[in-house]
Amino acid sequence: MTLLLRLENLAIALLALGAYWQWGDGWGLFLLLVLAPDISMLAYVFGLRAGAIGYNTFHSFISVGLLSAAGYAAGWSLAVPIALIWTFHIALDRALGYGLKYESGFADTHLGRIGRSLNR
Image (tube, rainbow, N blue to C red; front, side, top):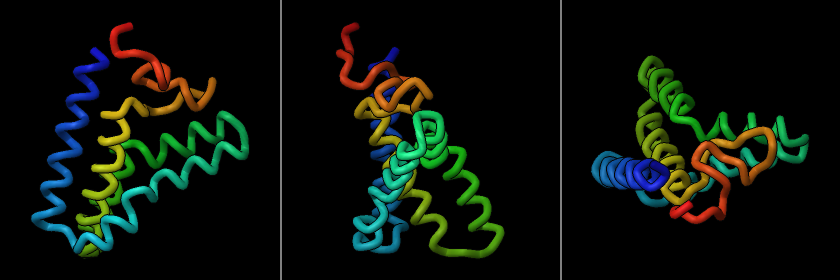
C-alpha cells in the first residue's frame, strides 16, 4: 500500500508541475517558493506536538484548498500558481516517503517511519 500511495503522489506532483508549466507565473517564483512549506519545521523548536501541528498544517492539501478558495474569492491571480507550487511540494514529499507527522517524532509519518524499506 505504501508503494501505491507514493506512486499516486508522484503522479500528483507531475500533474502539478505540468499545470504550473502551462499556467504558472515563471520559474523564478517556483524556485523561490518550492521549499517554503519546509519552514514549518521550525515549529519543532517548541516541541514534538507543536512541530507536528506546524508541519502538518503546511503539508496538507486542505491548506492548499483553502488558499485556492480564498484566492479565487479575492480575485488574487497569484493564488493558483502558488497553490500549484505548494501541491507539487507536498506531493513530492509524500512520493519520497515524507508523510504527515505524528506527535511521537518527526520520523513517524502516516506513510510509515522515514527510512523504512518499502518491502517491510
